Image (tube, rainbow, N blue to C red; front, side, top):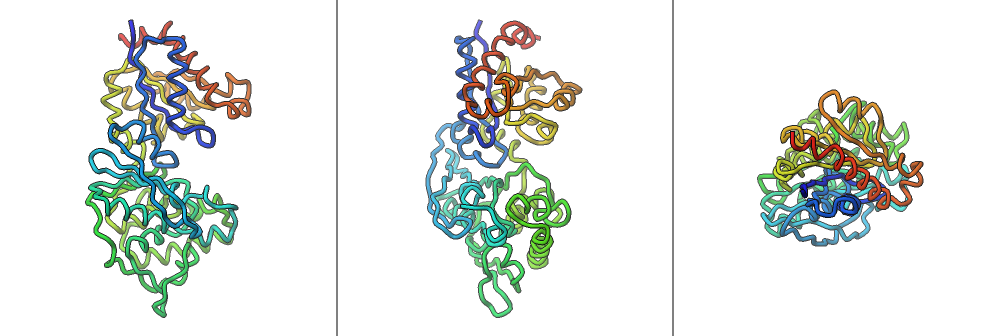
Amino acid sequence: MHRRIVICPDSFKGTCPAADVAAAIVRGWRSVRPDDECVAAPMADGGEGTIEAMASASDGASIERVRVRGPLGEPVDAQVLRLADDTWVVELAETSGIAYLPEVTRATAASATTFGLGEAIRFAVSHGARRVLIGLGSSASTDGGLGALVALGARAVDAAGREVSPGNAGLHELASVDLSGCVSLPDELLALTDVESPLLGDAGAAAVFGPQKGASVEDVARFDAGLARLAELLDADRDAPGAGAAGGTGFGLLTLGARIRPGAVEIARTIGLADAIAGADFVLTGEGSFDTQSLAGKVPSIVFGMADAAGVPVGVIAGRVTPDALLQRRATGAVEAWSLTELAGGADAAMRDTERWLEVAAARAAEWFGRVGAGQSER
């Protein structure tokens, strides 16, 4: 008897995109159970890889390229995604991401901008977007989204009426920000993130994420002051969960009427994941590290909730699986887990050949399902 298996992993950051993870799991599963129907639904949480995941899981999707200004002003070719219902997906990592920096330094941390993100949003709007999803992750900057606002038509000037410098450095020069020249945006502008940081303070954009972008201890305080200056001039909730996402870009988008949403929830809704899971016999999710943070709004937690609601057994394949995460999950619902690190005999080996070990893990999962899981799916 063939069964329906829904495979909905996140990317394994630094080694394998979500679509490739899902494909490897399908191959491994079919090596043991070739007659099962495997439904690949790669997931994301709004960070790097969001466009690729949604493109592979959405019928009628098309990827387009647009040339925008990168985080240091250099031209980059960014991917944007158009879905069949004129929903567009724009990813900050594609336009203004830290991966574009030749080197992460204090200088780049101060000058990097989100201008390219605004250009990509503008491109989507000019091509008929009725809804825009903006993935916030892997940012190079701490400019509060001001670069994106300027690209969309805002005017940010100093006391002499001159345009301010790009990046956080320019926030200290600000005398006024005029949003009246911004392009008309769709009613539904959603900023997708997996963080709940406010804009300012010890849990804010500069303190939490600035050091990852090259900021020193002294820089963090200055960056926070620059963001505070921006917050004085713009009307948005600086304490909103997610306002500090992507160097404060969440806050900047709030000033345009955007809503901040948990990325995994919105992406699951867009690709119809709940309906797919409701008709499944088993669900497999995963990510690079399955730990307690995985249970707080990241892809596995969203998948668990949908599987539990549908009464479908669920498993996890991850590069690393921590015992405390398994204990925490099993306190509320069953889960089986397979660790690439354990199967490969170490993290380095697992990361060198991630797809191979994903196939091995999926084959083990299929063997387990044949012995035990198939009976669970009939309960």
